[in-house]
Image 1 (spheres, helix red, strand yellow):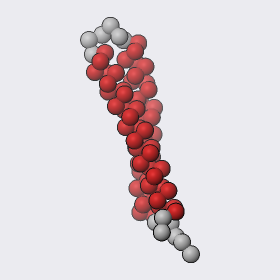
Image 2 (cartoon, helix red, strand yellow):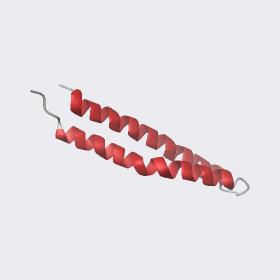
Image 3 (cartoon, helix red, strand yellow):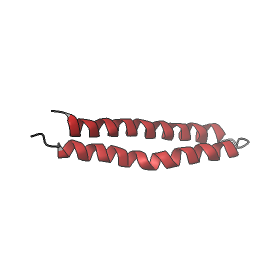
Length: 74
């Protein structure tokens, strides 16, 4: 009978927990940047928001991949 690897499962949940705040913060920062296009820090804030969104996508992918490995790998 197969058993779940609990360490790998916990690692995947940690990745997903890290992605959750970035998934909310990233779009909010991008929206804020687009509302303040006339400010001097517009490009910096926009790039910061895009990086946060990309980080959320990466952590979600990595977390789901790790969860699947914990549940279904030999």
